[in-house]
Length: 148
Image (cartoon, rainbow, N blue to C red; front, side, top):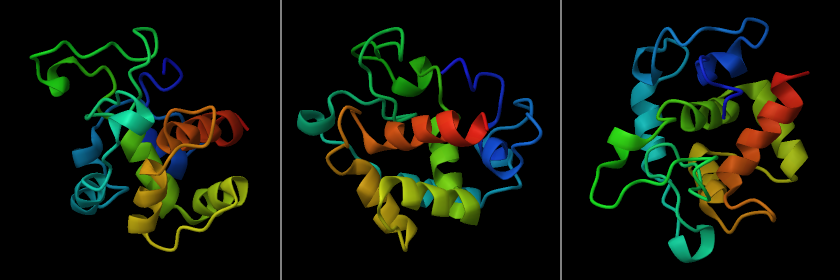
């Protein structure tokens, strides 16, 4: 995750030639419809018996403290999540951006005609060895799109 620290991830997709500083958060970004993003995000519910523990704020699997600090029992995830504005805005923007949407569909050999179907695919049983399809898409973007 250190790869995206200090960057606002929506701008990584829409304006990749410029590495934008994190000068704004998702609700202040003019590149996405924040209200629609929030509605879409509500559809992302993981099943613990399939995906293991997943942070309810950023959707990063809580495998160990190096990837994502485990949320302390009895505390609010929003108070401890280290990546609240990193993963989901990027994932949503991959769907919304025609070029990355097409590239992702080709890579994962699937079609997402609507954002609802995309959300369903993200929370479906994951493509091995990933814990979630959300992280699979995130890593695909970082490895193949961002550094190209």
